[in-house]
Length: 138
Image (cartoon, rainbow, N blue to C red; front, top):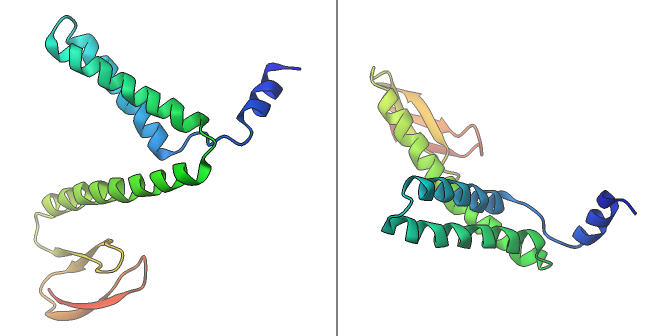
């Protein structure tokens, strides 16, 4: 039996990789590289064990057979990650809109960032993502 077939049989019923697992692995790599820069210091004594915890979490999730629990963890992670990502996206858009022509709003339902023209008074805004309509003053 070839290696690929043995690996496929071993992985049958296991969870595998997802966004949280990838995040753990990237965090491990970043902390590992940082610990190389701080070799011989107290910071390295903290970064190295923390990086090992991230890689252990990655492999635990990867080989886990409790698929339902890992999916729940990934969904919770994605909710938090998307909030953080959208916050920075909102800040970026807010600071790049210097000319004063557009105003930014968030959809109350799905939190999508929507740009609308300034100075139009009270208008009905329809979210392009979820089609929720709300009224705001521009």
